Amino acid sequence: MDRVVIVGCGDIGRRVGRLACVQGAEVVALARSEDKAGLLENEGFHAWVGDLNDPSMLPDLPVAQSTVFYLAPPPGGGFEDPRVRHFCKVYSEKPPRRLVYLGTSGVYGDCGERAVAEEDPVSPATSRARRRLDAEQCLCVWGEERGVDVMRVRVANIYGPGRLPVAHLEAGHPLLREDQSPATSRVHSDDLARALWTVAAAGRGGQVFNVGDTEPCSMTRFFKAVAQLAGIPVPEEIDIERAREVMKPLLLNYFIESRILNSDKIVNELGFEWQYPTLREGLPASI
Ligand SMILES: NC(=O)c1ccc[n+]([C@@H]2O[C@H](COP(=O)([O-])OP(=O)(O)OC[C@H]3O[C@@H](n4cnc5c(N)ncnc54)[C@H](OP(=O)(O)O)[C@@H]3O)[C@@H](O)[C@H]2O)c1
Image 1 (cartoon, rainbow, N blue to C red):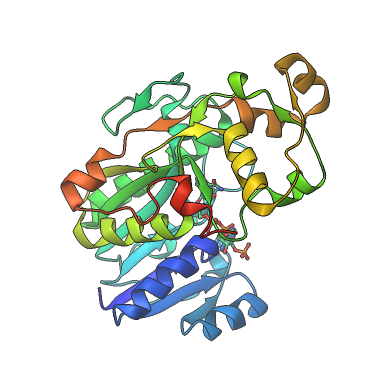
Image 2: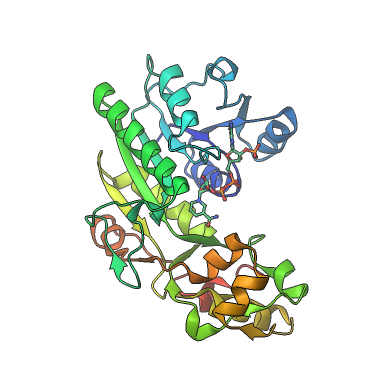
């Protein structure tokens, strides 16, 4: 990978970019503002200012023959991802060699506490998940038409430095009772960046890879583990009826959603190795 283009260069994008720099690749990143561009330049990336919301605001990024990591989320509302469409439209004439799209396990829909593998059918249950599936499908069609190898990565929850629920815990907000909070998969941000890099280097066009660590556990267990490690008193646990009264719906959803990913494929087919296979390794590296 001589040149890597990162579209949506936030937390995960910067981690991927650093890996690329270590490998000696040139890193080009799309930034939404001059300030953000400055931060990315400090990382050693070439930052281009532009906005996926408006195709006329997208710069002439050097995507031709490059490896693109598309990591920007869809905007809120509707069932489509206009940002992906704008990207496809603007860079159609000089397509990259490969593109890795980071999406979510939400496209599988509600699978109870059953582990889902890549060949399981998609059945998005929320508009957010439908927008993600739309993005995947747009990129796949575009890639097939233009000879771009498009690989998709699906993750459930990302944690890592700067993305722990410390503020929630310090505020003493309650947690859902642990026995009512089902297990879900998560991945450390550095492992996710390494997984994306592995998929770009060794994956084949059309492939999908789940990325979730080896020990799914409930959100309540996760919050308690963070509290214990950070030396914050563990908040009280409340049952689901009380939680419906006092928790914001989005937060409650976070506690009751179960998405267990079978991630054997990336390990068995691409030789991916976890640096943080469980929270026992990952949390101390995140505090
Ligand atoms: N949180 C989770 O547990 C989770 C789970 C599954 C998937 N994901 C997805 O994984 C991806 C990477 O995550 P992350 O933590 O790295 O997210 P992040 O830090 O929020 O990075 C996303 C990047 O996309 C950029 N972006 C957003 N709208 C844009 C636009 N209109 N034009 C150009 N750039 C735009 C943002 O720019 P600004 O910096 O200017 O805002 C930001 O740099 C995201 O798509 C996220 O939704 C997250």
